[in-house]
Image (cartoon, rainbow, N blue to C red; front, side, top):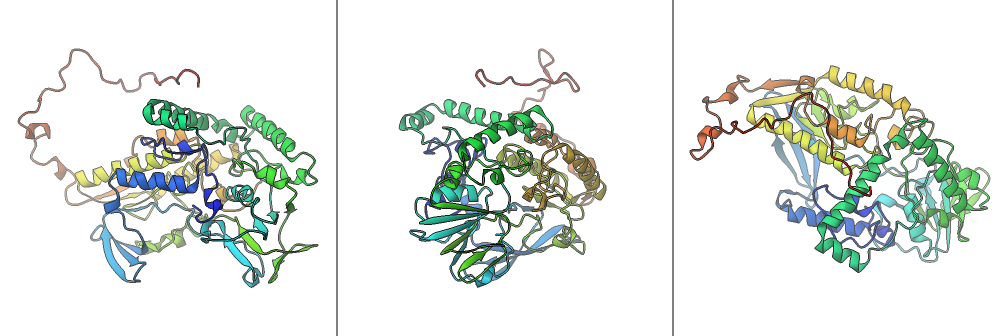
Length: 497
């Protein structure tokens, strides 16, 4: 999240989808909330669920090395405030650091020579003064389309440098403050807020067919957004360069509230294409040099999925193993790295629909494995190489049927145009959740501590260890158990959806 000026308050996404599925807040002040409000929500979440005591801030993991003999990870940690390094260990290592965490500066000759202020949206300096400045904005991804309308009232002039166009979702009147009456109702009638959140998630999940190439949903969405963007751009001389020629969703779709208005504003000029180089005072294009006071790089992150610290197991380093391609199983596990799991690893549902529910599904899946490790004396559990290869082969066969593999430059493909889709799950978010309902232990190699059946213990069930327990819970008046293989049943959507 950005910090500092009003840019810290650029909208992120529909507020009530940016939180846990089981935890809601009536305190958000607008439909597309600010970074500060979202931070406050997660801080409150951390406190309410008593997670503060188990959280170490300003601690950096330096390395993690697997000890096969002991079945533990030796973890080296640096205390950022003192620089001291300490040794710790764990039986299971879960990398929940995500992948949008390493700033990606544009690879442009002379950028280090530029003498004005050079900032990145992911490392926004506190107190940055843009008042009366000629500002260059490089990039038009999710950050760029939020920054432009946020800074336009402040700057004297804005030059946007765009390498490729981007689809922008029509916002209509959906971006607005919540009234005091609405906030009061959400607080006093939480079921109304739950229904709103359910509708937002239902709508997001309903959109998945748009990401399938050649579908009616893709065609209709493209027609709708083309019409919206043409109308918003009006007679702008570069309109034809600002509407993509590839399918909607090939790159991440951005809400972009106010972005198209920023493009047509008298303060703004647009330059489409590659930047040739920087000088100490200017940005140089093929036929033009533009002097600017401040350069804002909205150029995203390094999304190659390689870990940000050495992870070493069985003589192999994960960053080396993933040099060419991050080969991962269901976004969760990696062959050759025992007791190591990831949240939002490669092939997760990052652009398939709602994201946070996918993270929760991953956490639940990992907890099922943790429970088995604890209860059945497992030393190590490792996904097999053959399972990973089969999964990736299926994923690669699926992706050509989607828009993600079409001819656009995207971080889904590690910032390439025609590379493999590395980031996304081969299906919808709901499809992913369903796939993680049960752990496929047949896809894992398991090493036990001693006899694998030692967990059977003294022959008594847990019920029999409690004198007040009902020892005949299986006796009932009728058969109420689910029938395996029976007709699929589902809950119908609420009226009005």
